[in-house]
Length: 89
Image (cartoon, rainbow, N blue to C red; front, side):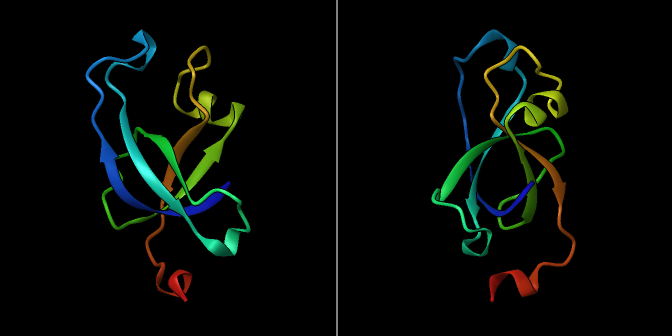
């Protein structure tokens, strides 16, 4: 899993049929995570909000968590971090 901060949402009226009803959020990955990627789009089935720190699962684990095993999902928000002040340092 990786940690990031939700910075926005994406609205997509036309999408793969298996993704209908899914909410998409833009997650900025923390530099501390050592990722080459700055931001990703993640499926959000738990209701994360903009500005919240979240745990994100990637790869096949994301598809299983999002109940989308046969869908093109590569990242899913799996948790909202309650206390993340130290994450921004």
